[in-house]
Image (cartoon, rainbow, N blue to C red; front, side, top):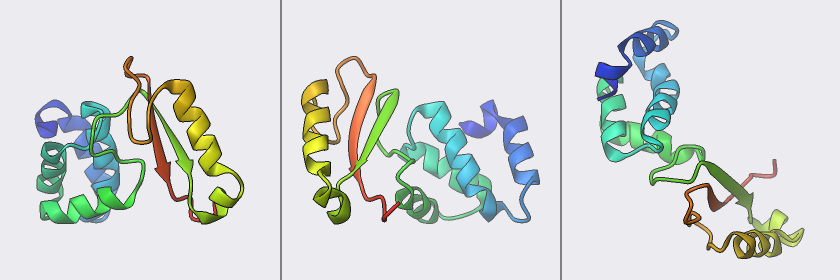
Length: 124
């Protein structure tokens, strides 16, 4: 459990925010750093720490593309392939990267170094 291993860090994080609810994001980052991704167990740990239902923490983790629900490689390559980026050649770029690494979107290289994901950049 996070609370056992990171009690001092958790207390420090919780002290920085006016309510426990506001500490969800930094606690999710802590959990992801510990486990390598935001597993169901990690999300339940965070929910317990901030006194929320796990579904509320799941919804926060699901909104942000930097929180991973499955194990990923050491480096995650997020490539936008939404319509504006696709019109600029994003799909060909995704194909090139995947071919070069020998994986498909959503997969991790056998050495565990790279994961390729397609995302929406929202015009960023």
